[in-house]
Image 1 (cartoon, rainbow, N blue to C red):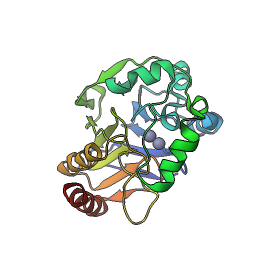
Image 2: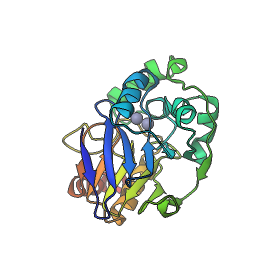
Image 3: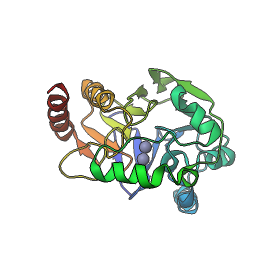
Image 4: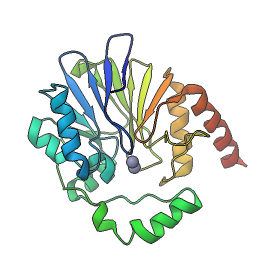
Length: 236
Ligand SMILES: [Zn+2]
Ligand SMILES: [Zn+2]
């Protein structure tokens, strides 16, 4: 299992990888889970938690409410009794299980949204569940024992969040995609200019490694390259 360690000793474990990554932050005693993968991955996620002898999850952060991130939120909350942290703009979707359908950002993803996502939106629903801590702009995780904070990075969805760990590693949800070698632009986004703006906010941190929810890690220079290209396109 891939893992990263920051200078203050916070460990980031990639519990699930492939189509949807799930990360666990640990300071040695407290554990924060970030995202939960789609509902059909529950057995795999539960086994990973068990195999790694993780007997407590103190907080669950959802980067946003899409089914491939919040699919097992209710099950995690039931099993560990942990509060769910989410942006307030996503709370309605978590409570109802509805999907905040994003727009496609290229011809292929637009085709998928128009032909499948809207028609089969029932299949993209999650089990409804209740959040406990709602975020607006920022939440410092020092109170939870982590040199880290959560920041609002909208664009992919209205309430997308990123977690900046030790001002060194950023866990960015779908604000960046890790699948494509040529860039970090996600195939789905509600608001592209907001998304590019959020990349600018991520670049204002000192993060050098970026961990998207889909695909592998990205470097600061990869993000900067995409940011410069897309920003020019937007203003042109
Ligand atoms: Zn998403
Ligand atoms: Zn996603």
